Length: 150
Image 1 (cartoon, rainbow, N blue to C red):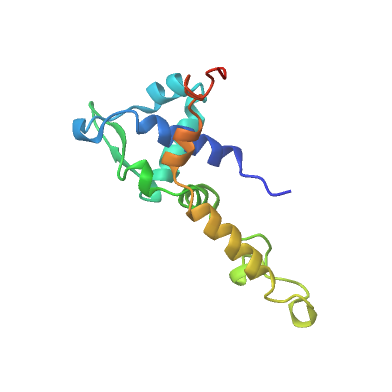
Image 2 (cartoon, rainbow, N blue to C red):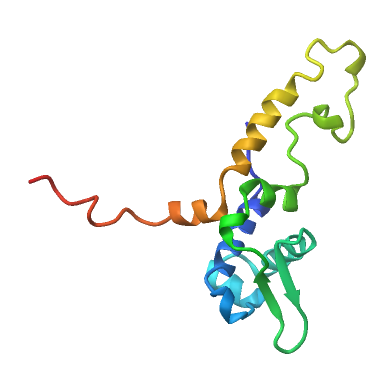
């Protein structure tokens, strides 16, 4: 089963929370305030923010008025970006893109290089979904959609 890690899931939640502050305000949010707003434990939020900062998705500001803010709008951050920031490159098997650890049967493998097709399809799908899509998909259906037929 393919599954996104809990840290990647939390990273999406944290990034969506960071987007709640308009960029024009240039305000920052602290790790404890994000943790309180999202109900994600503060040590986990801090770990996620550190990884997102290293990946260039958030900006860390030190000092008394320090905290974190988004570098780019959610519309320009893909799910693939977040997965790569938290879990590393998207690779379904050890042999995809010369994956880490290699393969014990590479020399005699009947499907050598074939997983790249599957991996590329999944990567392209994840690249096509932005965090703005994720944020907007979480909104409840509008009342107009739920209006009973006349």
